[in-house]
Length: 345
Ligand code: FUB
Image (cartoon, rainbow, N blue to C red; front, side, top):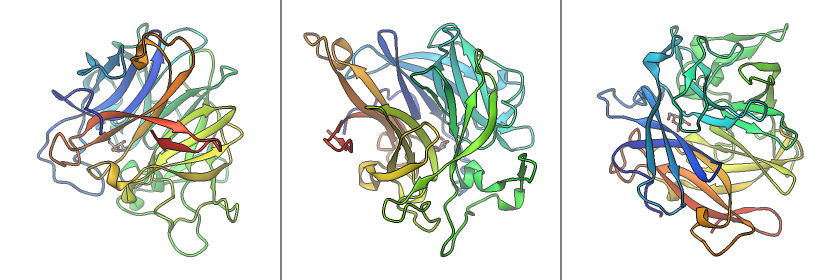
């Protein structure tokens, strides 16, 4: 296993991107707490975001740019600033950080904050994105410059609490909070969500929130809710490889990072396989991002000037001795085989 990016603070849920001549990593910032472990994730009691960067993939420690955004500066947030992601707005050139947190009613929503620089500091909008809910935003800019926000997480992330009304609006049912999810024969798993972001500012959704369907390759039906080794739990991530859209995610209680492949950014996606399994990480949660890096100084190959390498950023709890809410970000190289399947290198 590769060395952690930093060891003086705990970091988790890494979203990695190449911006300019550096790899920037947007993680959660874990901290010590007396809150007891529960299935709602109350022990993940984060209050700010640091931004990390690397000018070589193997540089340790990574540069810590310090606090880029603090919960106390965000008017609508009550607590728990969880897994963020960032994009460079293709229309304005600005950097935007998307992050989940509980609002003043204790409901997870997704907010956005903007900066002129990838490392921040980020200035938050006064309110959360209208129509947003649940956790784990992943922001993705497609080749045609259309931007998307993927999100969702069950149990502590409250995705199971939301249902669609006849008029298309969403309702929150607090009685579904806690470790509850659909189950039983013939019942489909809860899908992650995706919404277009409205150009040019990318501060609000453009149109309806849609389901991210993951189909079983044998039946071409949605993955069953009882299939905990493969069903979506949290940590959605989107990347493109050779014209295909790769949707990856965590299976939560079975601790896998799985992926499914489709022909469009909102699917449907056909389940393909696992990249990380329980044996590869310590701690309850698993959360990742994939990033394509141009070969050269960034990949530690000064003499090479063409081609790219792919990496998976993820977290593990070995630095804290396996404490699930004190995690450390790592990176490993991945390779694609001839069929486009992903493997640890
Ligand atoms: O960091 C808090 C939560 O743990 C994230 O939102 C989930 O993806 C899991 O990693």
